[in-house]
Length: 205
Image (cartoon, rainbow, N blue to C red; front, side, top):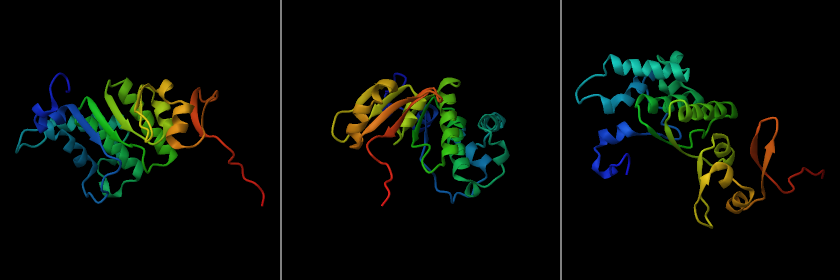
């Protein structure tokens, strides 16, 4: 049930107005300009056999400016870097104007700099734009950084759900991963981080 209505009672168009989806990485053989790829997010708002109107293109420009990707508008999707492509994917969800956005490992395949950029953007979407984001990740650190509610899946126990600061604990993580996990507070960062415990020191032969 979404906003009081069962999903099965909604048309595809109505569902698309409510829920957006960002996959891990799309097929990079798509040979569309970024601006044309973004405007596809307006499909739920454009009547059948009609072209996007000025309001639709204004939405594309607005989101591109917010995401800092205006300079990519004329570039081909197939020529973007992994970080650029992931930003475009998330931007398309915003062009879609959905209030709920599902993200499947949005930082997958990204280097640490682009991971930080995407995570910062996600936090901004949730707080400033009041969007509901549901994100999957293999990194407990990402859950700590983003905060909010977290669900921790374990192959050997029940689903744990609650506030991230409560759910992301050493005991739970160690049970899930089968390794000694430490959750420590780093004063310079002003937050907790996850590290693997145990003896991983390098010994001389």
